[in-house]
Amino acid sequence: MPTPSDRTRLIAAATRRGRGRRPVNPPLERASTMLSDTVGVMRDETDGPSYGLSGTSAARDLRCALADLEGAEDVFLVPSGLAAVTVPLLALLRPGDEVVTTDAVYGPTRRFLSRYQAARGVTTRFLPADADAAAIVAALGDRTRLVLMESPASLTFEMVDAAAVATACRARGVLTVMDNTWAAGLAYRPLAHGVDVSVQAVTKYVGGHSDVLMGAVAVNAPACRRAIADVIEDMGWHVSPDDAWLALRGLRTLPLRYAEQARSALTVATWLQARPEISRVLYPPLPGAAGHDLWTRDFTGAASLMGLVMKGGDMAAGEAMLDALTLFGLGYSWGGFESLATHETHQMAYRDQPPALEGELIRLHIGLEDPADLIADLETGLSAFRAALTLP
Ligand SMILES: *Cc1c(COP(=O)(O)O)cnc(C)c1O
Image 1 (cartoon, rainbow, N blue to C red):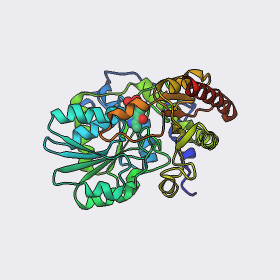
Image 2 (cartoon, rainbow, N blue to C red):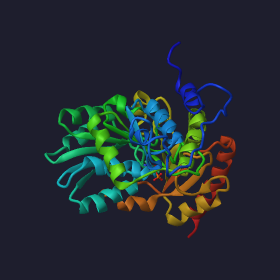
Image 3 (cartoon, rainbow, N blue to C red):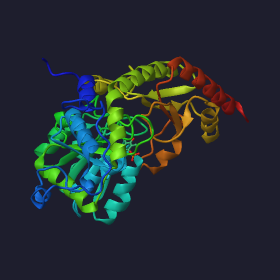
């Protein structure tokens, strides 16, 4: 039999194997203490975890399924998507090291680099948001220890040739970490392209229901694995069995939700692109959009998260548009079943080189609602935007 597809393997991974009559679902085991039959067994480290801190069966099953998906030797679970980025950056960097990344890196990641890591003596170079692979490689210096990539990047959705960056970095002994949340571990496999560490916010599409916070760190090289495992152990970090169980539940429908939401997102993006109120739709899967060529070359699917650069407007017009929406919720995060909208213009002020945008910046997450209904809702929002533009 050929290797089953992601859809099939994820169903198998989340279903209980074994013999005899049994529930379909893996057990939900809540534990701090684990009991052993004898002191000898208690000391045997090969006989499964000896304390709840290292996770019970749902966490183990989730780690295996995510490792299979990312093509990783191991996946570590951490309490949030942000921790999935900060843990490898704590594990792999020492005072005096330099990180190279871009201005479009996830905001809280930037804050961690600029506040916590800077105080620790780790410096960061934030290149322009649209820095391509050649610009990133040209920026590597003697102290550069690690390149952090996000593709598409946060809020402005720039794509980068991660394989080219990884190859050049490897030749110079520089590590690469990729925040792969947009691809959900499904549409792009960083490790297969030579990236050292692939992280994602499980909070987003894997959880898929806006009710779990969790991060995953996928890694192959033994030295990186050891360093990351040590930080998690040293810090005492843990994810709850209930959350791991919910993430496993999300995994079963991940490929279907992801594909369906991408289909709707492309329908909505195509409609938006033709609207007179909108200057640009920042969505690499959209033909003609920035990053489309790289996305077509490297990705096998798409998230349903996009940016809208409006034609003009101000804060009040952006807010009027969002306040007029009824199907799109106003809320942070994404990757759940429901559509969301956020107003992001002010976030550009945190960048070293704020982009010159033609108007307000809006972010949309397309959920599982009927795209025709979402378009009708956006039509109302765009009318409100237009009305706010014509006010004195
Ligand atoms: C949301 C997000 C995270 C953080 O996930 P949380 O679980 O909310 O901490 C990290 N990276 C990217 C790109 C994200 O969008």
